[in-house]
Amino acid sequence: MRLKRMSNVQVIALGFLALIAAGTLLLCLPIATRDGQGASLKDALFTATSASCVTGLVVQDTAVYWTGFGQIIILSLIQIGGMGFMTIATMLLLVLRQRVGIRNRERMIESISTADSGSILPLTRKIFIGTIAIEIIGALVLSIRFIPMLGWGKGLWYGLFHSISAFCNAGFDLMGPFTGPYSSLTSYANDPLVVLVMTGLITLGGLGYWVWDDLWHNRFHWKRYRLQTKLVLTISAVLTIAGTLLFWLLERENMAGQSAGEQALRSLFNAVTPRTAGFSTTDAATLTEGSKLLTILYMFIGGSPGSTAGGIKTTTFAVLVLYVFAEITHRREVNAFGRHIRESYHRRAASIALYNLLLAITAGLLLCALHSDLPLSDILLETFSAIGTVGMSTGITRQLGEVCQIILILLMYLGRVGSISFSLAIFEKRTRPPVSQPAETVIIG
Image (cartoon, rainbow, N blue to C red; front, side, top):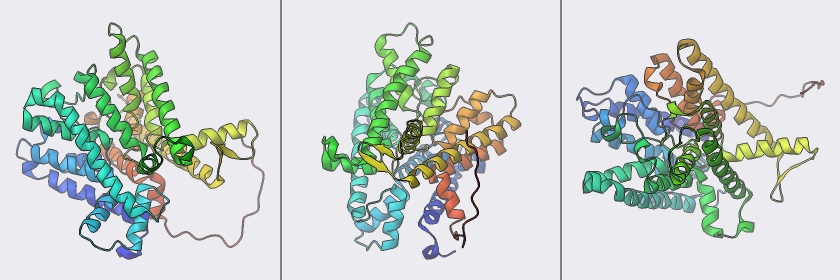
């Protein structure tokens, strides 16, 4: 199929496949692994997919298994996948002073989930400059902790790697050589600098570029914000505050003996990282069953549209909650902050939520059938982590067989491209039936 004849959604879906394929080939090179043998096709494909889809699930420890070259490839995939390859491509055209055609502008609009076609090029510049600036600031602050431990060169590299990984909500880390493979940030659970900086980067990356632009133009004038911005900020704040309190309640026995400040840091990070960063200051395998359930719910919701995060998105969750509230209170319209939300958005929100839920549960059933020895809560956490592009795991990723890992690869890809968008890419040509079918009553509820 010629590129010009492809729809915007199809180009984006194909672009991510091309990015994954390129990353897979590069990670298969002998120079990419410390043993000089190169990664197997399965491990390279899984890692490239996880990095490109900014997930964080791994089958090999990033610092222990991959060389500096391999880590650079992984970080590049994270940056391109997080920012969006259409953003990178558009920015290159602008730097080279090339004309950005209508089709590329439309694809850029689709890529970052915005509706403002008139300001797409200025917004692209802001996305690129803002992303680089925030990541550099985060890297410099994190380097305060890493330079004394590792020296200037390696300390700056660790700061940069974790800053980009956090802002892009990727969840890849380089802590394996110091605190053990697959340990993530567990050794920094009580470090305010690391926890708060990583929390800030994850939160900023998960707000969405459209929200950034609104905040930039209107500063602290709440009444001037778009409905999108108000919903994102409100739901994000509620989820963070409520999640912190709930995680403290569910994990209070595991945190016995720690100070109030240490418990607060752990609870805050546990509330933020499932949406959808994948870092851990608490080993997910040691979480209580209640905490695992809450983590699964937060991974399912995810971040906000047009951001580096995955999940069904905060606005989807908000519209569903508002719709249910309107039904309960017998209201004819779904309203929020003095604005009406059109019915087409209710249908799309319900479709996205149900689609992702069915994919995660179906994959969970398949994994249960192939690995009946693994706990159900661990399997569900794994599948919801993949579809939500989170990266949190109780450690079972490496125990899974090839078929199960392929299932996770598909979930990560669908989670990043968007399960509904992927279906539209396949079934793009739709025809409206010439006549409506006869209506009949169906009892609901």
